Image 1 (spheres, rainbow, N blue to C red):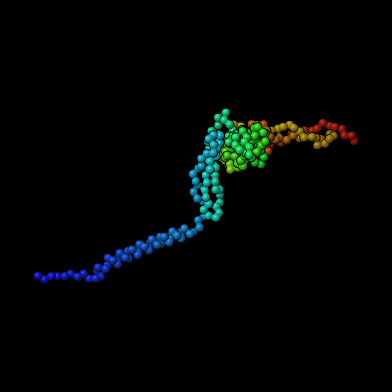
Image 2 (image 1 turned 90 degrees about the horizontal axis):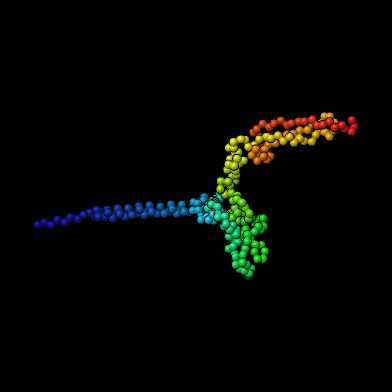
Length: 268
């Protein structure tokens, strides 16, 4: 019996190895290019803001607290603010609750201050230029000290405030608009509407009103002497005189002119 030996050509055996090597080189090249591109992107300066953070917790549990949201500038310069504030927990505190300033002063009760312990601190007005610092008075000794450079955010700027029209935020006194937004600048119009233009009332708010308050006579004597009365712009709800610009869209009545009594001049 004749034995037949089949010998595969050498190049056929090497083909898979060569192909695998080429495939590996190609994949490695793609990976290297991807890493290089990522490295180049990382080196490029990025300008702009990061995303806003989550809102912080509220500084108070009632009465108008403040919460914050922050973002970080990722470049050298960024236009805009890095922080914003928002009112929270705006429900009124119980009527018999201590004021928020009192709570903060009381935190120093029976604490060591300048080598002595004082039993009770009471909130008081301090330097008008430091509305948002914590000034407290010793109940037993009567002297006033600044116990903290800043009150807690959400504290009224004024000790005897009757509304939350201005509150302290980061040591600064900021106005609160009628919309409940810090620094919005919105106020109520003459009709009591927040941000309104005064046109929602049932009758015109600003009107020209005759006063019949005459000027002095233009001459102290003689037959040809006159005096005049001019109308004023008035808020019809409050009956108060306001600047004439509020009545600019309405026709102004003509001045009332009267002849003065004839007073004989000494020379006549």
